[in-house]
Length: 82
Image (cartoon, rainbow, N blue to C red):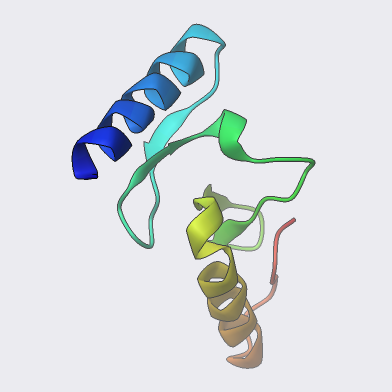
């Protein structure tokens, strides 16, 4: 099963590179993903500062939202970037 997933990820990487999307590791789980995997503007960023964020994979969206809200409750500006 892992071999099949690796092959799928390999095709995703090629697709991202060929069509100009990013291919980066998720800052939460560390798995690589491409910008083309974000669908219908349903994407999340892990907020770094008020104006900056790091893209997260689809599987870590909920974790990023929780972390961003936690930063808000600690008195920092910003929040969920969407």
